[in-house]
Amino acid sequence: MTRNLTLASALLGVLVLGSAVGLAQNAFPGPDQAGLFAEVKAMHADMKRAIEANTRAQIVTARLASQDARVAAASAQVADAQSELAEATKARTDAENSIRRLTQSLADQQGELRAATSRDIAETRRELGDLQHREQAARAELAKMQQAAAAERTRRNELSVRLDELEQTLSAR
Image (cartoon, rainbow, N blue to C red; front, side):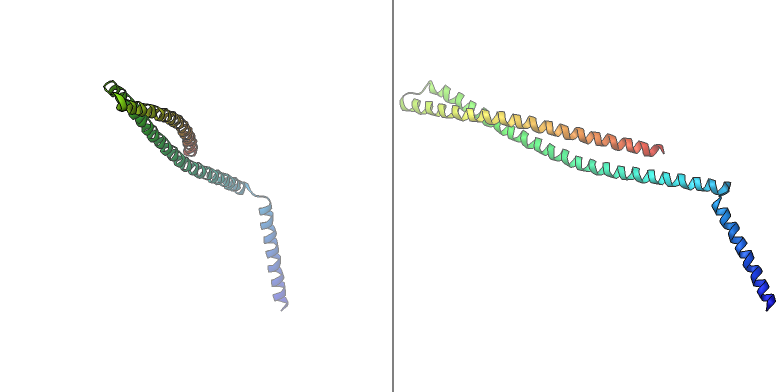
């Protein structure tokens, strides 16, 4: 039994010494462990940069998609304004043609017909003034919509450039 106790004590001593040596090695890394630690640290930094770049790319891509929708909406507004201007211009030219036609027919008319034609000309001229105002308003609205659409396209192009730069940065790594 004494022999077993001695053997157990010796075994316990070897284990304590072995763990002390192991702890000492972990406290003071050797050249191989220091290099490995530096490499792991560098890989961690690279992964962190890649995650950050990926996040930025996703944000810029989402902004670009949102900006595409804004450009499409602005383009639709320009198309609507162009249609309104075309309608206003057609209505104005129709009124001018009507005045011209009525004025030409006035030379051959007499009496009550001439008076009725003169009233029609006066009424059409009043309508023409309203139509000219409508056309001017439509031109102003079209110019405003075109400027807004151009601004949205400019913002979209800026985001596209940022995304391209980000892509080139990622490609360089």
